[in-house]
Amino acid sequence: MLKLKKVKSFFLQTLIITAITLILSEITFRIYHKINPTFLFTDRSYNRWRGKPNSQDFDFTLNSKGFKDVEFTTEKPEGVYRMIAIGDSFSFGIVPYQYNYLTLLEEKLNQNNQQIELINMGIPGMGPKDYLSLLINEGLEVQPDMVLLSFYIGNDFMDNQFKAKERRWDKSYVISFVRSLIKLQTQYEGLIFNPSNSLTYVDGAPTHTDEFYLNDTKNKSNMFVKNPADDIFEGYVKDAVNDIIKIQEICDYRNIKLVVVIIPDEVQVDQNLQAKIIEMFDFDEPDKLDFRLPNRMLQETFQKNNIEYIDLMDEFIAASRQTRLYKPNDTHWNIAGNKLAAEVLSKKLLEKDSNLSQ
Image (spheres, rainbow, N blue to C red):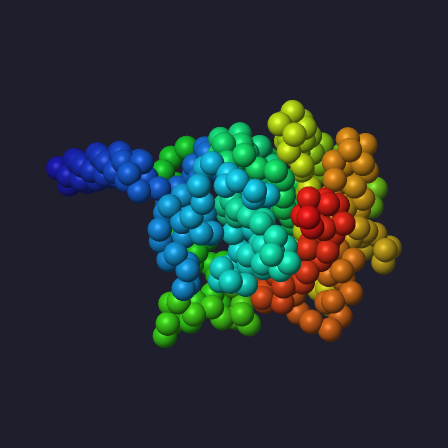
């Protein structure tokens, strides 16, 4: 009996100590995140993955707002045509600053001694609702003449839903911290940085394991299924587009030009990857997947609402037959993909807006 009491006492003490530890950890994490925001914890704003102001990104220093760009003034300089680029990790880019498609695009638009300023406001992890918030909170005050909004097919349809779900489950900072550590340990295989020099980018190194990347691509590819059993994805599209329509309304009211860049997922342009994904689905019908379906849905809605857009899919399909355009086992463009995007956008933007060529 005495031994049983000791066991019960031990477990009770352990439970109390564990509870106190978790409570103190929760308080500590919340205080730390308030002072020094980090991606390890869920953030209700669009700032979870925002760059830390004046921190290093390869051989480039982020500006004082944490954007991957040089410093800029709130007041637009006289005689300058100002563009702001809003997007997620595609806009921020996994490549160094000098290879980023927005950096290259600004250079191309200024080749004939133009006075065009393109401010990269890309923040990783954002979605359509965040694009709207960023425009209202930070974009409008810099008096842009154009908003260049990059919409990534691979996750921007689902981002609103996923982030809402993540916020519900990750109200605890301790749980969020543990989940983030597990993801970092299990999902990432390759090197983005060269271990001998943390300021060196390795373009050919894989980011994720083969298994993780294929499974993730397969899960995303449900959006390409013809005649699905439910209309869940259609609802995702409507939700995402509604936020873009709100952005269009704001831009129209402020006399700002809006152009949406439709960024294809790798599986839409790489035939070898397509073949692997089709095999994983194991459909009776070989053409059950329509890799252009989401783009058509976007285009139809944009045309209906007079939203200008540039779809990069055809150019990327053509170029991918000779050149790899995405980093291995990664959803993002490599150096070649960024270069191609800048070339296509430069040409099509000049066609769309005469102010860029004056």
